[in-house]
Image (cartoon, rainbow, N blue to C red; front, side, top):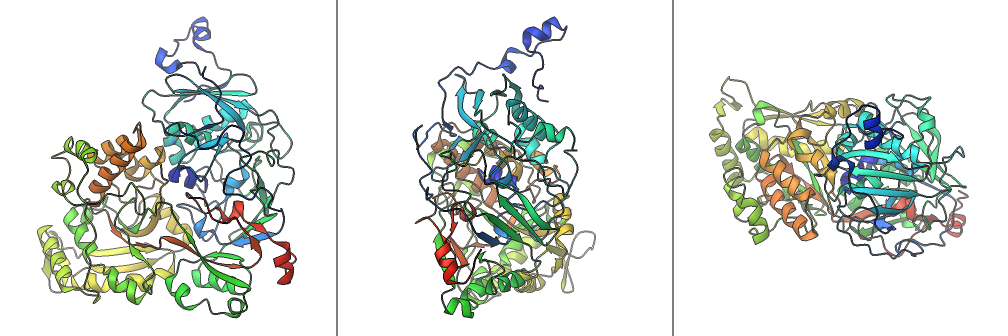
Length: 633
């Protein structure tokens, strides 16, 4: 689900519109909702945007976002692969355009087809500004939000986008949407239309300050369209939408084109100016990264985010690079790098003991891997909030200690010491000291030796299946598997087709698997989907490791409900310390920048925004460069 990325990085039984209110309920013989559920009226002065902690960098009369070229020309085409543009999706195929439900594999970028009440401004950590909603009024208790809609908002068939559509969207996503969306929207008490141009959203008392920007960023669906179409059905019929793009030509599993809507109703708004510049955005699907790289060399792809270190170090020597037709470039990446690693499924008995999980981490020699396989291009990931202010370092600060002390006895004693970091090996590929430590931990956890194998109390050998859909990672896993073999553990690299991979992830049918999760600078409600006990038992959640720890639940709640950014950072660092000492994963690596290859067909702003790299939305087709390369489109 492509729309989940923005929610998670940011970035979850409504009353129907027109349903009776408190007075009407009494007349109808129904019990009115309690006073707290009715919320305070949203009588505050209209605002042009929202942020988690109330601060907005742009004034009401801003002309455009600061990182765009407002005069960028429209036209041309960009051809990309899906891998960098989706989140927890099947990146090598698609079989539905219904991106809002768990069933099926929707292509990334479907969010370009849908408008929302407000949209993100990527120079700020979490601010959103008005798109469909021109302004929003907020109650004194900040639990009731009245979004005032623009009268000229339209769906692609010309029908008006009204408050009724917004109410339908929130209700439907809450009751029938992907589990992540349902979890987010569970914090909404009710939503009602007050005429065609105002939507009132009332949050539950316990809802955090992350909710308003999150709700404002949800997609708006056409009620009339879904009156005749089954929302819960996986389908290849492109849905009616209202955004800057619509689904164009496609071939299932091979490519999909998103066509710019020339008469998009919002194209001249400040939040849209200088964006959605390409006439066509084409996603090309490949089952292998090396084949995708070859597609860059021959021009099938025109922009490619390089993630294979060997390619970056050795393969950008093909003729188009040498003649300057293809540019090899690095762009800064200031975003939190997040968590990339091999996640260990603690739902399985063999991984229940944290000493076992810690031993698995000691067997991975990053220093050897980086030097011999990655050409020294990566840094070691240590934190779930890597490359951000939320990353724990050193000993806990007083603000962190205050949170951790309340959980003393429920968390490992090590959280009160220096933040845990992965060990540094001797770079030999088989560090005897680290392997000896791993062996001791395994024996302490109850494993015993039987010949060359490690067995449990029932005599069953310790075997691990590492699930993947990409053959590229096998060369990285093999040296790790050899070290595990030295410990008596048999690891198999299990390569499956993408559909089976996603299905097994959704149902948590794996031992270990590699994933990368990156979080926004202000983690929102969606963060609950990664580490909480509820998410551990919710199919399709991102809690791959099955973390179900009351202390973690408490710290996640502290993070999400933090009243200030300083409080949020302290809670995130405390949470980071506890998660690290749970040894729920084997941390991998991160580059700290964007490495890209692209055909010299484009113009782009001088520098990307601090909190994103929006190539598809802010770059543009340069007709003069294209003509010089003999490319007409």
